[in-house]
Image (cartoon, rainbow, N blue to C red; front, side, top):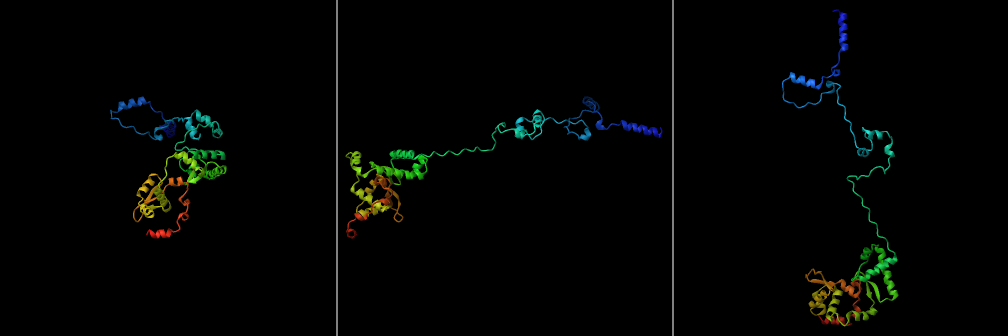
Length: 307
């Protein structure tokens, strides 16, 4: 064969040569049959991962279409390119995100967010007439003096209004000449009958029954009121007689109470109660009348004689 024929033959072979990745693969059934016939039976081996693209040729698997539901699309803000009719519908409408209003977006609870409770509305402010009537109604049913703070809390009104209104009510009762009056007692407010009508009230309440304290009880109560806190031994020394029984009577009636012990001797100390102030119509014990006008002129001589 000449050199020219050899070159022509090589050129034809080069032109007819097909790369391995472009060559068609034999059918899977024929390949399996040929491998079964040519090789003996062997135990199964675990499948191996796919070979690189260069070795397996152009027979590559096509990616599967991924479909995302519309709800997920709304959550992502229509920013994820998707396949399918929903994606084409949205992509065909530029500016759809901006054109959609808040009413078109379905409301969903946001996880991890606490509900903010609205603050309770303040109570409506009462007029002066309503406030006056409410205070009078409460004061008619109380069985002990009630403070301005308690009245303000019950009526849900500021204490700055309740105090002046009580003073105004008390002044109005006094100016009108009613048989009762409103005054402070034991740190609060309460309605009392006027002293000039005490005789008629006493006839109605007592009805012939005597509930007065004995002379010894009155003297002991006076010593406790002016010397409190005071021990029983001190009371007995001032009165000159044993007062243990009288003290027990006053404690039982709620006019005197224990208030601790003396630091040196450990004896019980006694003082007057709120009921004592209420019965006398006093706000504090500082309003007790002074003793000097009631003392005899020869008090010093009497004191020396008792020593």
